[in-house]
Image 1 (cartoon, protein in one colour):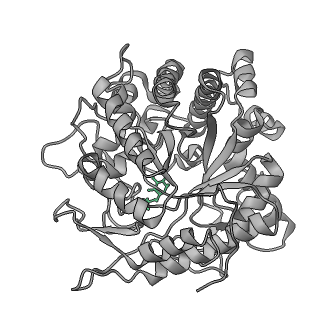
Image 2 (cartoon, rainbow, N blue to C red):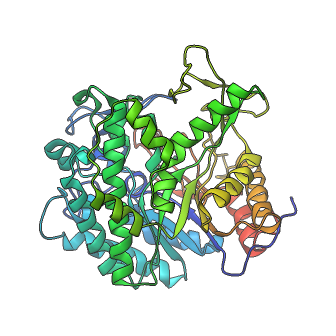
Length: 479
Ligand code: BGP
C-alpha cells in the first residue's frame, strides 16, 4: 500500500462515464440518432468508422453500451458500495432534443435523467454532468454542418437551458463540451467523434474550419455559463480539457520553443474558456495564415462574460516533441513532431504512462488559469481477465491509479493546487470512445460482454473495486 495524503473533507471521490458509451437504449424513450450511434467499431488503436445512417449489416457498439439505461439502479448501488460521493455522466442531447432543432423537448428523455439523478441522491452521490460528450444529434451534422454553422449555437444553448432549469436542484456541477481541445486532432479520420460535428470532406482547410467551429463552441459554452448562473447562482459550470502535457525532447532551445508553441496551440481552449479571451499569439497566427474567421465583437463580449467556474480535465498520458528542420516557422504540426519519450512506459494501446506529469499539469493549470480544478477522467485501458471464480486481478490498474493519485494529492497537499474531486475513468466497464471496443476496459466493475455485444452483461467487482473503496474510506491516505 502507498501512503497518500488526506484530501479535504468535502472532496468529491467519484467515477466517470459518458451517456453514449454506457447507456445503450439508443432507440428507446423517444431518443434520436446521435453521431455516436453511427460510429462502428474500429480495430485496436484505429479510429472508429463513421456512417451517416445506421446500416443493417453493421455493428454499432453504442446501441447497447453496457445496458445502463435499464440497469442503472443496480450499478449505482455498486458505486455507493465503493463509497463514491460523485458520479460523472453526460446527458445524451438526443434524449432531450432527438433531432436537435425541435421547439419542445422530449419529456420521456427528461424524466430518465430526473430518475437517474434521484437514484444517485438516494445514496448521497453528487451528479457531475457534461452537456455534450461526443453526442451531437446527427441531424444537426447533416442539416447544418454541426458547429461550422452559427445557428447551432442556439440549439446548444436551448438544450443547456432546458437542462439547467429542469435539474438545477439536483445537479450543481456541470461541464459544457467534453475534451473541447481534442479537435486539434481533426486531421485524424474520426472527426465526428468530437463535439463539433464537422465533416472534413466538406472543407478544404481543416485548420480554419476547426478554429471557426471551436469559436462557435466557445460562444455557446460561455452563453451556457451565463444562463446557468442566471437560473441558479449556486451552479458551477466548468470547461473540460483533455490535458496531456507536452514536453520538449531535449534542452535544445528550438525544442523548448516548439514545445511551448505546441502547448499554446493545444491549450488556448482553456485560455479562452477560463480567462475569457483569445491570446495575442493566436490572433497573429490567424493573420499569418490568412484565416478569415467569423468572430464578432458581440461574440467576444459573451466569451468574456462567460468564463468558467472551474477547470474540468481528463488526464491519461503525456507526449514529447522535437523541432524538425522542415517546420522552420515552428507551426503546430499534428503528429509530425511527436516523438517517443524514453523516460516513460506505454500501455498496450501505446499511451505514455506518466503519473508525475499529472502533478506538473495541475501546477501548470494553476499558474495559467488560477481556477479550481476537477479531475473528471483518469484511468488505464487494459485487457482484463476474468478468472474461473469470477475474480479479476487488475493490479496494473491499481498501480496506475495509485501512482496518479499520489501525484494529484501532492499537487494539493504540497503545492497548494485546488482540486474539487477525482472521478477516474471509468466507474464501470464501458465501450471505448476511440475504438468502440469492449475489451479495452477501464472500470472497477467488470461487465461480461464482448466487442460484438455478446455476453450476459453480468457485473463483477474487480480487485480495484475494493482498493478504491479503501482509498475513499481513508479520504486518500491509503493508496
Ligand atoms: C476520453 C473521452 C472518454 C473516454 C476516454 C478513454 O478521450 O472523454 O469518452 O472514452 O478518453 O478513451 P478510449 O475509450 O478511447 O480508450
